[in-house]
View (cartoon, rainbow, N blue to C red):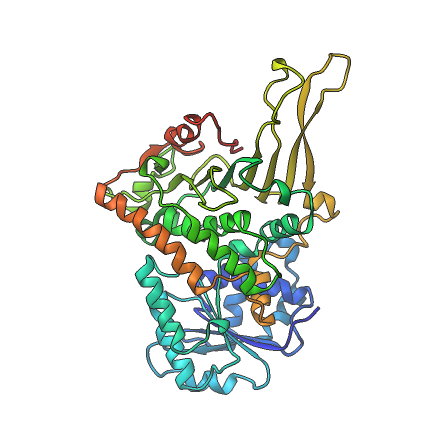
Length: 478
Ligand code: BG6
């Protein structure tokens, strides 16, 4: 179903994110028939290019970043004809008149700020001054949204000078992932799970976002951020919110975001003994973290594991263990809800410990599995085994997984539709920083050093201890 007609301006239209994610995503929506016949995409950046030059650059990007199966010469040519380019100076006057002339009236106007946050204010100011953006326009901003509470507040205040909250779309691409949205449907459209979704029945919850990549070419950004700012404050926090939140009364943007905000506000401060930070070592030809960021003194973490408490009626006493890291054994993102043991085992001690675990997998092979205990078939007596009820979406839906839109495609289309449900509200981002800041400041005050870990593992040993000491264990990364 096509969305409303739109003009989408991408500031930073020649940048890495635009080439890698935004434009390939838009192309896929174009091929899927979701882009109205007249809709246009306008790249805006500093480089001196004309429309043809930009189209050539985008053609190269599509060839590089689209799956081969998605590439069709004919479709690419048709898509490129929707593209325009304006060379613009975010801090000066060049290009703004040209941009204004390009924009059509009576269509959705969206402006994607795919640029450094330091330029948000300049762009907002000029869009307003040149009357290019009005009451109905939408702006899209990317993470990092600030690096602490103070800078996030300043960014929010800058944007608020020219735009209402209803016009601001703060992207966290994890919210665009298929499974993340499905999590809400599974929780709130089935009677099966919600009655058990609390401290009485859930022993603990694990959230893992493991990556195999290192920090490679992004060293200078990453070393100032670390896993806490780069992943926990946003992506892992969003997953935690969706798992832990109360049922919203409606699936509407503010009802959902109100509930998420309450979760963040209910997070306890974290005891330093419940945090393990790590940095990867060198292995074979691969660099160590220190080499990658070219900073011998770096104390920044490329891995973090933590135990958190959501202090409210539903979750009191049920810990949430979260971890994320670079250069781990596998690329694997999942949430595991580990239920308590049955209150009494009628099958005796030899039956062993069996518990139900619901795993919600974001990538790869998105889907869910519910571990159920059954009798081992055969004449061997009452032996119990755990088998998965497998709900891998690609199998269940008979698709090869390709048809599922990627996070960015879905989110950009939501901007055009004017649906903010999957975008972070300003107060959510601030609350997340308010929780993160004291933790990071504590490391600085105590001069805390990360543990080293071997690439290709599940992170430092100390992270395993975080669980072992409480008789629990992380799920395998494999
Ligand atoms: C980004 C982080 O937001 O998310 C990266 O800045 C990280 O460091 C990436 O690699 C992970 O995203 P995905 O979709 O590949 O899990």
